[in-house]
Amino acid sequence: MLIRGGRVVDPSGPLDALRDVRIDHGVIVEIGSDLAAREGEETIDATGAIVAPGFIDMHVHLREPGFPEKETIATGTLAAARGGFSAVACMPNTNPALDEPATLADLEQRIAREGVVRVYPIAAITRGRKGETHVDFAALARAGAVGFSDDGNTVMNARVLRDAALDALEIPGVFISHAEDEHLKGNAVMNEGAVSRALGVAGSPAVAEDIIVARDLMIGAETGKAWHIAHLSTRGALESLLHARAHGGRATAEVTPHHLLLTDETVRELGGEGKVNPPLRTQDDARVLRDAVREGSIDVFATDHAPHTAAEKSSDLQHAAVGFTGLEIAVGAYARAVPDLSMLRFVELLSTNPARILGVPGGSLAPGSPADITIFADRPWLVDPSQFASKGKATPFAGWELPRQAIATIVGGRLVFQR
Image (cartoon, rainbow, N blue to C red; front, side):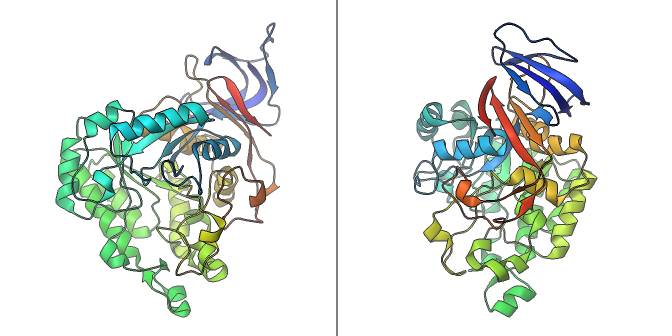
């Protein structure tokens, strides 16, 4: 395959220039100017588009095993390809949880049969994600786990978490925190603040996230385990992240499209359609996160793609399911959230950094790298959930005009999606 005429953006170089990219046997073999097509070589015209190392979403819920009515490997990975992602990392809040090698082996078989893009499993930290006894990290790493998280739940017992970090210290795979103090959160359905009080509903205070982020990063620093904060959403959590780094902690963090662009006012407008954990915060929190993206304090853009059935999301705020679909709107939503971000930084957040943090192939277009490539363009489009490949059609971005869109996704030298 030869990709011609595109603006090649590769932070690992770094490179940002008009170039052609040649692929052979699933590997990038040449980058140059005015490369001549060879006999039998498929050609893609990328004129006016950006050619980048394949985007990796390190926080996705594919819902299998256990919840095929919400999403499947087939529908979730097709949604990823349509969103410009050549790889995703799937979270372990499944049924059963991804806490045993046999469960991961079954998942890998499903991925091999049905996956459209690469899928990297994130295994649980504790058995059943119950926060009581940690898993066999070595066995799960051998079975393919690239990280560990009880995502959806917080490991509330600090001793259990510290013992787990020590046990996993020499095991490849970052720890990923879902940071919500369950006692402070209680039965909250949104952020605690003026809007929750006006609506007369229970809210989760920002400190419920702040306390767990600070605790987990302290455990990471003390044990030496690499640590990643999922869906960071508050000013206080960001301050703890910066403090941990300043004191030598191996700490990284991600932000989602919804926490960058939306606030608790969205819940007032949309009800259950705006319900998510951690909850949509204040305008000040969203502004601080956007500034942190610009300043380099945030490492990763991740969607927290969390599809549900229409019935689950159409319920009232108290009973609606938590989360919404994100893979197919992400590229445009990030561009809208931080429109002045350099293209190198944009690609770094979506490709180079996720590959580095997870320790997986990709994140580079250097010759010899896997031919995982995302081609995207700056062109406005309207979000129409009825056109989603994902089974989850619920998104607070329905009807929005977004300024950037994926137009082709290549995995291992194979074109898996083209708009």
